[in-house]
Length: 493
Image 1 (tube, rainbow, N blue to C red):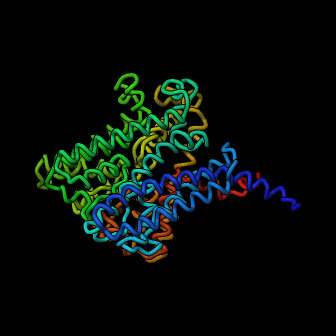
Image 2 (cartoon, one colour):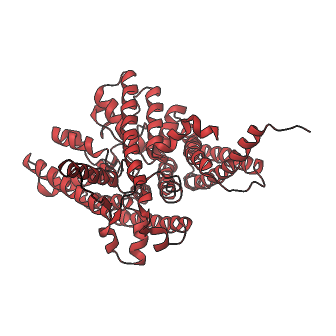
Image 3 (cartoon, rainbow, N blue to C red):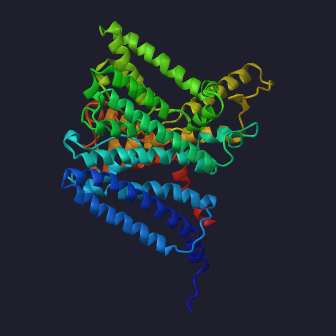
């Protein structure tokens, strides 16, 4: 009888529950692929064969992984959750790229993986040219990938990252304000309720988009990518096809903003009072930021000769799109003037609220940074003073402060490293820096003529696409979740 080495036995014990959960995720992915397959079958489109083969591969892999781990108890420890969190996004993104390789676009492996990672991480960067001519099934699949990524982000933010002590949802678990007791008793229940709200918001967006004049397919896809703050559209022009339809732009602005708010607060608002949304400090901060920037840039554009309502509509839509990291574009805002270009570059880093589908640094980190700065300035004046640091009426714990400092440092360090790597590949400074920023912040379009709102990422070298794909994954997984896997200490236990 063979004796298994203890280290191998420990590795098997760690990996088996992870593999079993990954099998479930692949099973969900295969089920979702049936939706575009049904559309393509009804239309008699040859792309249905690409989805049939993709479903066979994904479902076959899921079944194999499930039976190999038969009888394994799913009890995850923190180390396994770090591995699962990273592997799930990598594996699902890889398998989701199959229809893009086998279908009509027939993308290369690099381009297909880039597109699917951009979708699953709800970044919105694209390498596709001629999106208008894609089959309805592939357009629907792009929207479904972003919608799946959006719900995955919410579940990760609520149920996984707080447990790993990563991410802003730790703010809701301070001693004086335990949100899990006040809203629902368990993280699983909160995740389910948030998922129900996410689905309801998507259905509402579908209906209103359709009533506002979108075709049924466009209404479905844009509703999914709006609530996911993803940014994939059914046209190369993005929302530029609705440039002269302000109602659609204002509706999209509303649903993008909804996707960027904490879903746990929507639960509170439904169970208690809608005022809880406004009472939340990060929600107020986000709304004040948007109001000030939109008003300022609108005045700037009106001074340049634009009519007030058109300027307000275009500025509001594009500012909300960038701040919420959705990435839609209704116009080439890089042509609005140098002040606007600089403003949009800064806005790339902001992001929405913690516990939402948006990316970026999240507004609460800027607020906590401001609190720390003012406290330090007061210490310079009153060296012996004791100043309480509070956020949302609760004391700021050292753990939260350390997390904000660590994340902020590695966030900008990651952008700097990616920008340097892209520059080494021959990209100009604007493309390299804005590309790195938009990838890590999960925004979508960058700046400049190549990857700006009027361009795409198709002309970049393959090595640059792989670097940006890594940046998108690290940004979506809050960076530290990935970096901890690279430390020897993590694997030594």
